[in-house]
Structure formats: structure tokens, C-alpha cells
Amino acid sequence: MFKTTVTDLLEAALNDRPDLFLIDFSIQSDNHIKIIIDGDNGLLVEDCMFISRAIEHNIDREEYDFSLEVMSAGATAPLVHKRQYKKNIGRTFKVKTASDKIEGTLTKATDDNIVLEWKVREPKPIGKGKVTVKKEANIAYQDIVEAKVMIKF
Image (cartoon, rainbow, N blue to C red; front, side, top):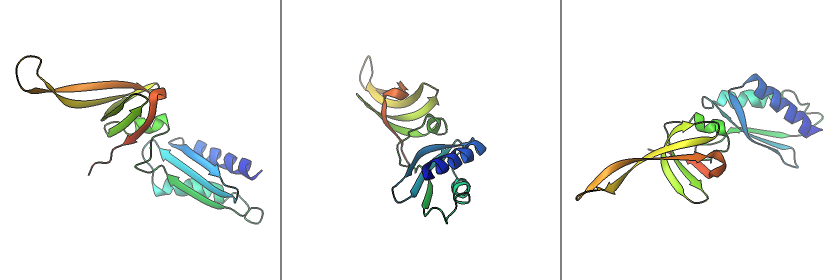
């Protein structure tokens, strides 16, 4: 009953804010609710407060003893939702597939795949020395084992 109530309140709040989406949601046995969200345009503290209030203000504390934690996915957390890729176009990614590890700039995110681009130095086809070559990889979402945004300082 409690989980259904929380789930319904969470879904209603996310319907009110279509720019926000759920990354993870759990309720532990001690009624500790943990919600991780993200947003198409990033995430503000106010967005977390909106979700928190939508749940907390609609559950009777006399009936249920619970704790609530609403947070963003975090800058170093692996991406888990297709919508997260679209908002990160232009950023550097490290993507792990079953057979490869690729680091490059995310240039495109469609409904089916992402495109990474990077530059490498390779020997010239003729003569001595090296030349910079632009490489590109199309990676289907189902082939991604893990993808992380690389934070550059």
C-alpha cells in the first residue's frame, strides 16, 4: 500500500514536470524512500525539492513513518537513460562496450544510438611523420555496457 502510494505520487509529479525523468527509485524495508532524477535541461535543487514536496506533503506522517531522499544522478554516475545522452551532446565521454573502450566527444544521440568522435595521430600513408585523423564510432544503446561523462578541469 505504501509503495503504491509513493509510486503514484512520484508518477503524478513527473507528469507535471515532463522535463524531469526518473533514474532510480527504491523503498527500503524501513520505509526509506530514495529517488534519483535527472532533467533534460540539467537539474536544480528546486527540481529535487519539487519532487520531494509532491511526495512528502501527500503522505500522512501519522499513518506512515518514512524518510525521503531525492537527488540528482551525480556528475560521475554512469548514464542509464537515453534522455541523459541528448543533454550531454558536445561533452567528452568514456564508453565501454563488450569489446571496446572508446573516449570521444558525443556529437549525436538518436533514439537508437550515439555517435562519438575523436582525433588520433597515425603514421602518414606515404612518407615519414604522422598525421591527425578524425575517427567516429556509431554505438547502439544496447551495446553500451557503461557510459560516463568525463569531467575536465
